[in-house]
Image 1 (tube, rainbow, N blue to C red):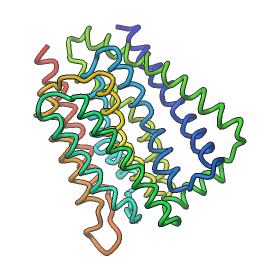
Image 2: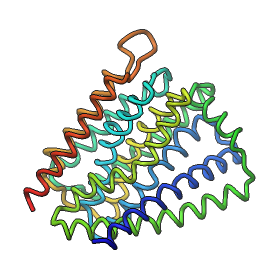
Image 3: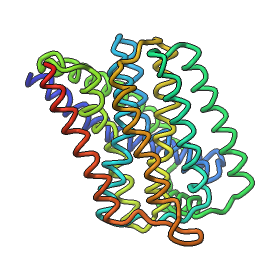
Length: 326
């Protein structure tokens, strides 16, 4: 038990550190090759903050633990909205202003609906996984078109400022990308091994461990990024970080895991986790879509407290049912 716990703690610590370095290196590398700052923010940073989920789910799928892979993806989405945005809004209310981010909300809802419908037959097939990856490629194309048509945006200006403040030579950015990727893989292996070991000892399912311990751990980069961005007044980054990460989780994390190893879906995912994720996604329309006035919306402290309360209730229910079942 102690060894598995140490593996989880060390794995999470290294995972966070390596993901941060991977993001810094990737953003600087993209800037060196002339990628627009808006695309860096939406793609490179979005991919980087989802890198822990991708690495963990790929390894879990390769090792025959599909419940851990799926639990990590859906659990991270629930954690991102309820815990990350809830806690961030409590610390500093999140103002929603960017037109680009306002368009991402319905896109995220549509992606969540498609991914949920795929699982309602009780399995994620190879075709389902390929559809998710195709949708991801389509999203990339859409993002490039939008970015090229509208080059100046609040999000792009914030990313551009960050890049100027943390400028680095090409050699250093390549080193950070390479070392960050290697450590991501190694730390993910530690985390998966520790999580499966803890699940076996406690007698709970890998799905529950994926939805809780692993999901929270792999969502820590989003939590740190969103809190820092909100405190700096960079609200678009705080919200865009979560929206982009959730899209990546549903399309890339689940898609790659399904391509590697198509798997049956635990009925609890359909009956419990998908509805929770869906309701939380819909709540963002009411909290942050801008119904209070023209062009603006805000996730205030009260709404942040509601999101956080939902997360606490969800985790408490998981813990209660898991130990009752064991």
